[in-house]
Image (cartoon, rainbow, N blue to C red; front, side, top):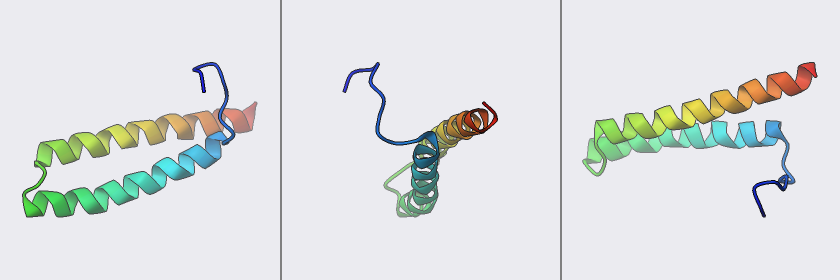
Length: 67
């Protein structure tokens, strides 16, 4: 798939998937920090990035609903 091709998934479906990944990261990263296999900084950055992606999709979905 090239950059100009659309995926078969809606923005809402992608938003839901990102929300699931974020929830998984929050749970699993905390465990990894506790076990010492990931630093607190790495966990916070990974979670922050996924929150930013989720916010982008939430804005896109809201924009599509009002268009």
